[in-house]
Length: 275
Image 1 (cartoon, rainbow, N blue to C red):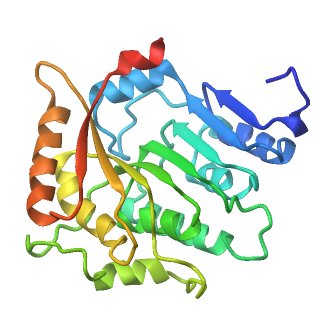
Image 2 (image 1 turned 60 degrees about the horizontal axis):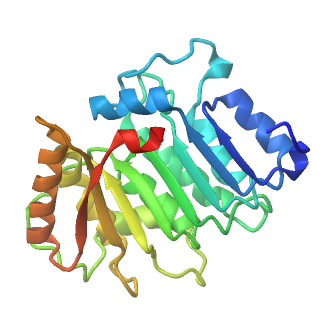
């Protein structure tokens, strides 16, 4: 990292991220195009628990406020690096215990849509790859991502539980639900030249409860797209793996409710990342 001038850095890999470091990068690395944040110990612990409840600290997070990675810094990463093409963020957010999931989603989606305006020359309009598997989002938060980043090709997210559908009717992906339309509109209407949400690849980390309430509305976002994304459902295998069991239930659910979507289960091996 220190072998070249900060203003010339284009690719960077870090083991930790926090609010102070994000501010430093935003002010010192205007050419940054690829940022990877990966910590093997944190990654191993989070994956082994296979649970990402925002109201529980599954790992020891710093007590000093400046050393935390908060939603404000996530917003900075997604709005202050004009040349950013790849953001691979394998790190959890610090979230206040009193914060509700829907508040996180609404704030995240609204801030992205406001930042995408023509008056923000630093917005990364050509982001192609975004991976945030440790930050649970509902359809509202994912809507903000798809609406803001029109060049996005690959998205990896973790689903948070939303409101359960009224009925389990078969989805034909022919119409966008009223709730999703409202989410896409937000506080700021989309420009008329923007195309419908499109992705080549969608990676979805989820347990059964979150998928049964959130996955349908997320896929509804692609109802008017020219093609549906390839959906990959990673799971952590093992002798008694809740992740693997949940993945089978999700596939069965999608085959029944969303027969037009092709989904692939993907066995995830943590040790592959230590080689």
